[in-house]
Structures are given as structure tokens and as C-alpha cells.
Length: 172
Image 1 (tube, rainbow, N blue to C red):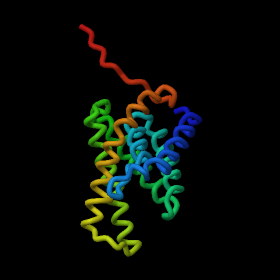
Image 2: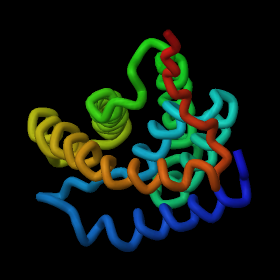
Image 3: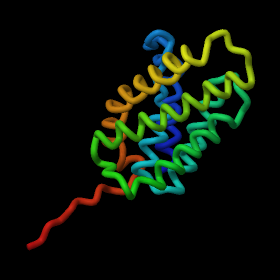
Image 4: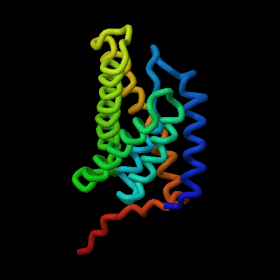
């Protein structure tokens, strides 16, 4: 991976995540472009590079929150490790696969966040309401916003130094 280009991309995504995404919230649910980028890199970057990139994305997410530092970076590393470990068993070029993997990752991260908030703090909302808004709706919104992001990231693949796609050559 070309790390200078990645750092520039990280700064751009952090800016969009902190300045634009809050204005596009739906009923309080926000898309998580940092998580979607983590899933994309887990699918297409080399495994070690995706884990380092996920850690950097998580550090950026930690800087955007008031939670304990390291919580999001550890969460994103676990997501990148999980996605990169299953990528050989899925059709990672398929948009449906990308949608499903992103949705599952977003559901897990948002569910973990909901449980964390209920254990550490005393939130005013019930778990059922939190499941509807901050878990399901936010996960669906992240998944929907990930498709245009993935199209941009695929075009930036050579600049990022991502491995090229393997074309299935058929010889008779």
C-alpha cells in the first residue's frame, strides 16, 4: 500500500465523516464511512496492510469521539482481521458480497457500541429503541453509503497500491 496516498485519503474521509455526515443523518442515525473503508480494505488490500490501515482509521474514529481512546481502533482492527480472514471464501468482487459483509460488520460494531454504552453509562433510551435506531438504521445507512464510496475506492486502487484484480483467463 502507498501510505502517503492512504494518509491523504484518511484525512479526506475524516473530514467528510466529521463535517458532512452529521448533516446527512437520518433520524439520528449516521453512516460510518471509516468503517466502510475498513471493510473495503479488508476485502481488497493485503491482510497486514489492511490491519494497519484499520488501526489508523480507528485512531481517526477515536479522535472524533469522546470515548476512551483505543476503543474504535481496536474494534476496526478486529473487523479488518475478520474480513481479511474470510475474503478467500467469498466473491469479493460481487456488489452483493460487499453489501452483506459491510452490513454484518456495521451491525456488529453498532451492536457492540450499544452494549458498551448500556454497560458503561446509563443511557436514557431503552435497548429496543437503541436496536432500532443506533444499530439497525445506522447499519443500513452505512451499507447504503458504502456503495458510492467503494466505487471511488476501486478507482483509487492503483494510487493506493492495492493488488490488481485477477481476471479469470479461460484457455481452451
